[in-house]
Amino acid sequence: MKKTNITVGLTTLGCKVNQCDSASISGELQSAGHTLVPFNSVADAYIINTCTVTSFADFQARQLIRRAKRANPLARIIVTGCYAQTQAQMLTAIDGVTTVVGNNNKHRIVEMLNHPAQNSRQIISSDIFLQKQFISTPFSPWTGRTRAFFKIQDGCDAFCSYCIVPFARGTSRSLPFRDVGQGVKNFISQNYREIVLTGIHLGHYGHDLQPETDLVRMLECLLSQNPGTRFRLSSIEPNEISEDLICLFNRHPNLCPHLHIPLQSGDDSILKLMKRNYDVAFYRNRVEKVVQAIKDIAIGIDVMVGFPGEGEKEFGNTLKLLEGLPVSYLHVFPYSERPGTAARDIQPKVPEKVKKERAAILRDLGVKKRETFSKRFIGKTLPVLVEQSPEKKTGLGKGFSHNYLPVILDKPHGTLVNTIVTVEIEQYREGRLTGRIVHE
Image 1 (spheres, one colour):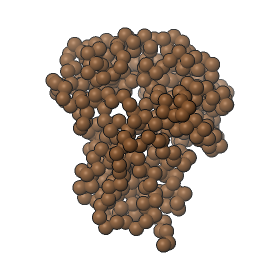
Image 2: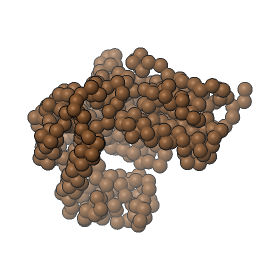
Image 3: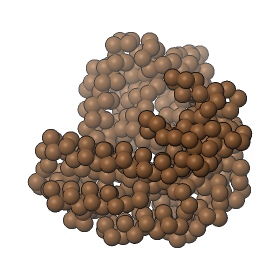
Image 4: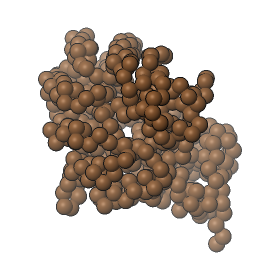
């Protein structure tokens, strides 16, 4: 049977782990001879890699399905990702959907496209909790990016009461260390200057491997063996920030001083209902210890508003904690009820209007935190990795510092792309720093 090369529109919702999965699918599509086209254009097939962390993410996925159907009513529409894993039957009922592929079968999508479409709608999925091995995917470059995102862990064993992710991703699984090392070599060979290590529960890396290892031991090897490459960690839980991890930042200048540490609530009673395994005092002490130990570190926080049972007192405790913490930015999101999670049964519910009001208060605080942290660096120098795309209005170069601050440069991006330049910071404007390159 002769293989037909087709045009494919691919789009992704959700986290960096999902984006890593899509990068792998993209690479496999191109290796198979298929042509990737913008999702909004007419294509022979559309792949929608979904998220289901919130009800809004579900809504976005359904919108994208309808958009693909309008663009080409005859196209094959493949829905994959976390929404596909948890709500396969519902998705197959949507007009236009031809195939629903669970998370543990994403690696089969390109193979499916190489065969004629089935007349009937298909669900290709299985019990995610039976998946015990990390499914390795081929190395794929991140088109148009100077930073590579590298998924080294998948799944989660925590089962926080609000979270559907374990039901969508399964239990914690790690990429064997030898494969991590090879993946890093592949990215470096493609001239990536920064690699972001990501996972659903990154701090659990290595616990399932034989012999067992952990994130710190793996990082120590990567940092020592690749001193010319910047490494950055994605989100990591507060109780997984060990003394040994903190020491790595001071021993290895190529480990970016930036941590994203989920909080979720600043009230002990709400944290208990959420089934988070720390209290406010522990969280505060851990953040303060990190800030004291690691020079110039940026700390980001996930915080949820409107969890069932959150009254004015509980929200006030969260606000007070965040006001006093030395952090650089906040990711704020309202609680979204998810099917099958324990939090659905917790009362009383918080009205949507109240959720929005509380989210707005914390987002305003987040803007102030970002500004305060950023302005600390005016008059100082920062190492900045110049991004592929220039600043839209001026054509000047832009990039991110080692501690994750966006910086606009004083020169056109041109030959600076994918280089790390030393920048003297001059001012803070419209949420970003501006600076003068003092060394290329």
